[in-house]
Length: 181
Image (cartoon, rainbow, N blue to C red; front, side, top):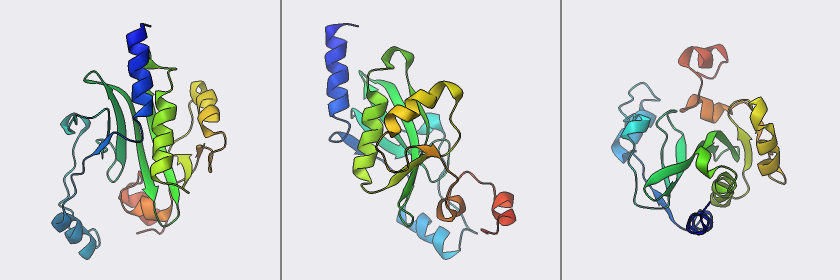
């Protein structure tokens, strides 16, 4: 790895908490309509991963293109997306979930995932962090390393009823089955 690339990666890690551009597709009218009708009228936009914007910032926080209601924290280096993780936080329960962290193979083991997760913890101080899905066998060492000393420890945990009801991973029939709808 070249000295220039190492320096760029070091700068990117340092900018994880200070240089984050935020973008949301939420509009007050559509959000109000959704809440006033208790979810019966849902005109909120649903973007796919390919439709999400690339912001002119080393780190960006956008809507998730995969899960409705989730956010996506990404790191960009030289115009290329090098790290991404999806997350959601329940402000009522003070619990956050992360899912599907991914670093481009060329940049793995350079601290980008640790910096990104640490920045999320700083943004939501006092929140216990878990994963939304199970850990793959090959990633157990990663989760143990980044979860050390973190409330919740990034252990797998079911979504709380607030997140499951308003944009979680559960389908409508599963919500009814669990009595959340």
